[in-house]
Image (cartoon, rainbow, N blue to C red; front, side, top):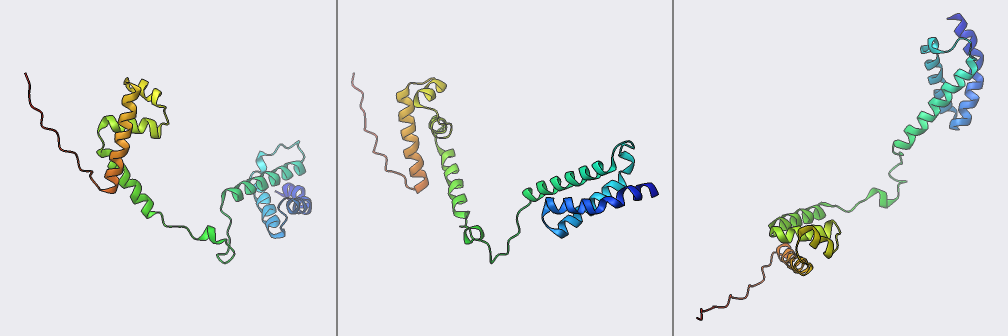
Amino acid sequence: MNDMVHLIEPLIPALRRYARVLVKDRFAADDLVQDCLERAVSRWHQRRPDADPRTWMFTILHHLAVNRFRQQRRSPVEVAIEDAPERDVSHMANQEKTIEVQHMLRCVDLLPDEQRTVLFLVALEDLSYAQTADVLGIPVGTVMSRLSRSRDRLIELMDGVRKEQPPKPFLRRVK
């Protein structure tokens, strides 16, 4: 124990100077040196006896400083609310947007499977009409008509308006 104190104590002023250079704040530098000393004392048995204790201590201090810098980058910066820019403090409420998206997803679920599939492949997966036709094994014209019908139907469902269907013509059988 006495050997440890005689080796570490003369290094403290140099460690404080180096810590001040690293963190540029006297109080933070003192905290860093304190952490370095605690780590050195608790892990004294891990040092190599033939190695220079000065190098070992500066290495510990440097690694602790790097870890603090990393932690500070990950943690948010504290700013007084009066000093914060208005765009960072106030945000538009997004409940309406969430409700719109949920409504749209419910309306998409109401589409027939073949229309929904084409809509997803073209709109979400960004496939071309030809690629969509290849995936589904249908002609490109069918992809375009299904996509058109799905878009029209989705607009109707989202607006809550049902277009009047023209009456089906009465067909008679002719022999």
